[in-house]
Amino acid sequence: MRILGYVVAALGAIALALYFAFFNNPQTQEQEAVNAAWARFAKDVAELGEVVEDAPFNRDERTAAAGYRHIARFLATFLAEHMDFRDPDYPQFSRFPNSVARIGWDNPDGLYLVFPVRGDHVYRLRGNASNFDLVTVNVYSGMLGHTPVSDIRTISSVASEDLDLDENGDFVLTLGATPMEGNWLRLEPDAYIVVVRRLVSHWENTDEGLWEVLNLTTLGMGSPRPTTASIARQLDDAVTQTRALRELLTLAHRLTFQLAQSPNEVSEPAETDPNLAMADAFQAGSRGYFRLREDEALLVEAPSADCRYTNIQLANPWMESLDYANHQSSLNHRTAHVNADGRVRYVVSRRDPGVQNWLDTAGWAEGSLLARWTYCAEYPTGISARLVKLHELDRYLPDDTPRVDAEERARTVASRQAAVSRRYAGGS
Image 1 (cartoon, rainbow, N blue to C red):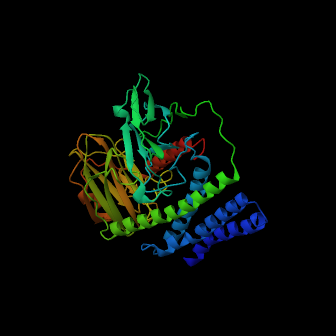
Image 2: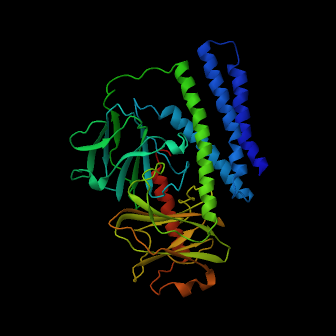
Image 3: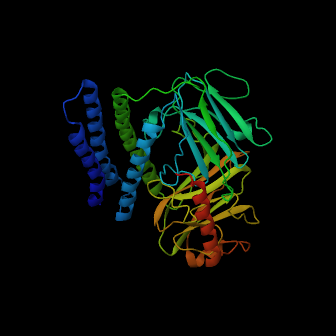
C-alpha cells in the first residue's frame, strides 16, 4: 500500500519542483508571498497520503487504491472550485458533488448546485422545481473539505414544498440579511456557501429547467483583475483547504470504522442534526455497514413511508457513492418494489440474486449503507437487517417479490448508464 502512497507524494514533489524551477528567482515582496504560499500548498499535498495509510479499515490494495483516488479527485476538484467558483461577489454555479468528485454518501438521485455568498450582500436565485421530487436550499457557514467541520453550521433552509411556485414550477428566491417580499432565505454574517439539492427519482427526465444566480449588490459591475496578492491569498486558502480535507477524511474514517464495529446492522432513522456539517435539514437517515462473503446477502427491510422522497444507497469504505451508472447500487421510492404487506425489502449482495430490489456492491466485500427519508409526514420505525445465505434468500422473501433475469438486469443498467450520461452531458 505504501507504493500507492508514492502517487500522492509524487504530486507534491512535482509541485515543489515547479516552485523551484519557475518561482525561486529574485522577486518582489508580493511575488515572494505567492512563492511561499505555493510551497506551503505543495508540502501539505505531499502529506495527504498519510491519511490513507493510517485509515483503520485500510485492509487491502483495493481499499488503499480507492483512498488515493479519492484524495486525487478531491484535490483536482477542490482546487478548481476554490480558485474559480468561490468569489461571492460574482457567484457561479458549480456541480459538486458530481459523478467524479464524490463525498460523504453523495446521493445518486441528487443533482447538486453550489454557489458562494457573503452575509452582507443580496442574491437572487431563479430555478424550476417541476421535474424534481423535491428541491432543498441550505445556507451553510462553511464547506466540507475547506472549513474545519466544527465551524460549519446550517444558517437557514427552505424546500420547494414551502416556496411560492408559478404554474410552470418556476420560482425566484432572494437571499439576504433583511426579510423581503416573496420567497426569502436568511443570510448571516458568517454565511459562506449555498447548496441546492435537486432530488430526482425518475432518471429518464433530464430537463432541469432554467437556473440562475446573481449577486444583486454587484450587479452590473465589472470584476477586478487578479493580483499577486489575491493569488497568494487563494493559495494560502488552498493550504487551509488541504488541512480541512485531511480533517474531513479522518472524520469519515472514524465514522466508517464505528459503523464497521457492528457489521450487517442498520440503525433506525435519525433526524438530521441542524449542527451536523452540511446536512440536509429536511431528511432523516439510517446507516449501516455491510460485510459479505460471495455467497451471502444482507436483507434490509423497511416500512413504506409517507415521504416526498426516499432512497437507499451503498458506498465504499471512504463514503463515496459506488459506480451508480454501471451498477444498481441505489434505489428510490420509484424504482424499489413495495411488497403487499407494505414493507420494502432490499437485498445487498455481491452476486445478483435475481430480484428487483438488488443493491449491487460492485465487487466490494464491505462498505457503508445509507437510507434517506426526506420531507416526511412522519419518519418510519421498524428497520431491520438480516444476514442470510444467498441460496436461502427465498425463504425470507414474500411470494409477490418481482424476479429479474440477466436480460432485464442488463436493460436496467443500460438505462442507468444513459441517464447519467445525459445528466452530465455538459460536464461533471
